[in-house]
Length: 118
Image (cartoon, rainbow, N blue to C red; front, side, top):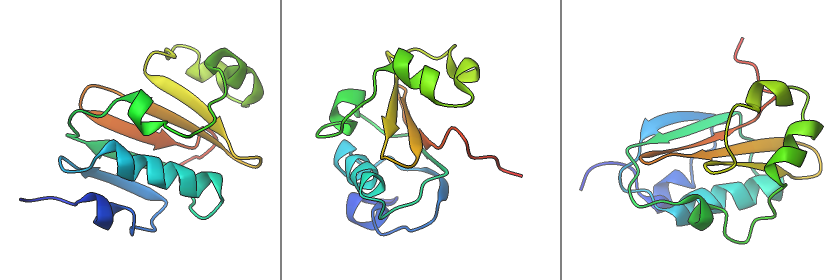
């Protein structure tokens, strides 16, 4: 088997990760989000491509989600994100920072909506 596995992905400490991850499950992504909630992990942009059988519901298990329309009103650039649907997006707040989770058919992104790659 090729590619990073769950137990390897959660060890990555980079704030920015873009990579194919066909062997990664919702469990590892959920773990990273929970670490972010506990302020043990900083996330700017994590984009996992080529993932399989991963749903937004599975990724967000045990995570307190801010209703999407409310989330858009509390982030500074909510208008920019307003074109995205709550069907595949979720907004999170850990008391200090915000995080957007986007789950598509074959990818998952965790994005700080205020991060600017300059």
